Length: 125
Image 1: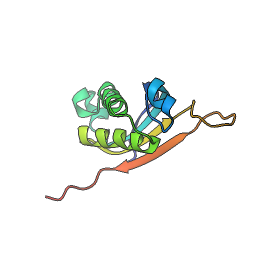
Image 2: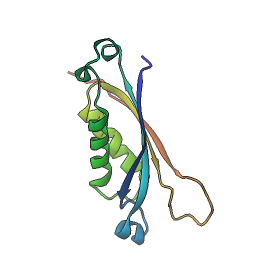
Image 3: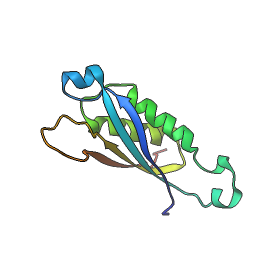
Image 4: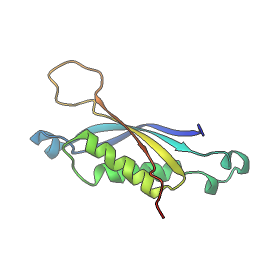
């Protein structure tokens, strides 16, 4: 299956980071999501119930990203991936990209971030 839902450029203000000013003031992060979903049913039925609500995915991702302050982007991205997979059974895999355009790096740079790919583990039961 190669069907994908993508959501890019979700801007979230959060307080992740190692530096004290990052946890106090916070900064802007940008999240991109790529969701592996079987869209064969919804591509025929035209029913929202047969796919995944983009709005609900964004709400879930935003809550997971903002609700806890993490030191590492890797951990924040992992929380988003875990929340999406646990909340949306139709999603078989998720790629989460977190951009931190204002990271405290002593250099001129366009972007920095992490990309995590997580796949649903088969249930044992």
